[in-house]
Length: 84
Image 1 (tube, rainbow, N blue to C red):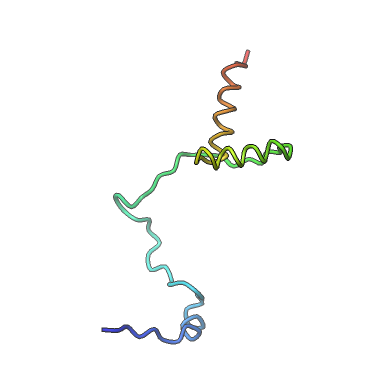
Image 2 (cartoon, rainbow, N blue to C red):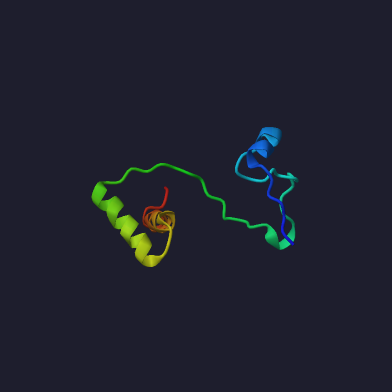
């Protein structure tokens, strides 16, 4: 049994969607399909080129995200410098 693909340009003209199927339901997946990420906040940080390169290489070697390494470093700094 083969499915007929149809004319993608005609479908795009009719649906207004090009390159993907239109979403049929706006509700999130139920049960085990829901993936919950830990809550994080996005910030932009500036590093020297040497430190940025070290961080990138270290993250690859440890198979971790750069954000995880920076968060660990900040937690250590926070413990060494508690607020007064």
